[in-house]
Length: 444
Image 1 (tube, rainbow, N blue to C red):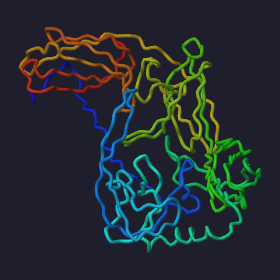
Image 2 (image 1 turned 90 degrees about the vertical axis):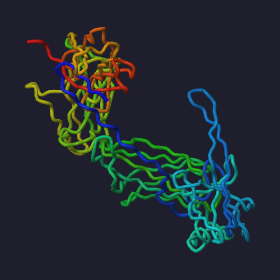
Image 3 (image 1 turned 180 degrees about the vertical axis):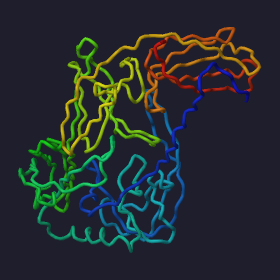
Image 4 (image 1 turned 90 degrees about the horizontal axis):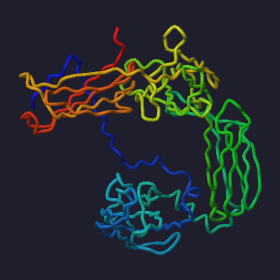
């Protein structure tokens, strides 16, 4: 591949996005009475049996992509059992499961081994997988004990939940730890109406309930937390069923402000970005994004304690619907405003001024190392921000017979240039793409 020479700009290759591996993950299931009754009213099937055979079976699913129907074919494992003892639900000796952990398949089935199987109805039949109680019989005592209890009288169904308080430690990410939140009022509405207040450990309990569908409502009178009202529908299938709705409240740190134009009028629809103040050495920077409303107002909430900066188009530069020059809120001297936010604090920023950048002409010439021009090449200029993986508005031109190109671009706006040359142009063997970056400033 030949290298291309291009006027006096520095080449800066974009970093490739990391490859993400996806897999099914279940963090474990709680007490069987909370999860054994299926989802959306489905009745589960539970039985004990010895695996007789495992064979692959082709299945087909209908999919809809952008209004166009299609189908996808894949394989599942059909597992047959012998010496079956039915425990709950309909009788069966066959279940389907995924072929690997990546599609939630239960990978532990082995011919000759005895299992307790927990399955749910699916369009292809009864299915089980990683996210179920299916396990070798010697590991399934909790499920077996619970099913045995179903033959005994029950004091009624049960709802026991917990309210917790979490703190965001990073922009865009909730804390992985939380603490109990006491004093939250919980209201139950359904076949029975009840109320309770969460205790010092954040927990609450409703015992002896009549089966049916309940609405659990959780409200906090605190103004320093976010989630003023939360509701969830809970289905208690029978007198032995129970449910555990957990509610997470967040410490509600708030940063808000307005976006005005140079004349002090509110700007609608400006892309406002927030990030941590110190991003030195970070390969990937996390941003929160907001849009100014009809009054020019924006708000970021559920923020953790820390130092932040706010600006316009920080992440990806100017866009079609936010065509303003990249602007970091400053303290009046030109330095970025560092917003020090205390836990649960509330900061109102001075107005951010949005300016449409003045245009300037950028010209260049694309040539081979031997001095020959490269005509017909595609040159793209994309508005860029602090995030080198995100781009905003872009324009394209084609080099002329002398390899020259011309853009009219905004001053004080970072850009990244992409130059693509067709494989048949100028005797090049393959497509060549170079990436260069520059920020335009007024000519002095």
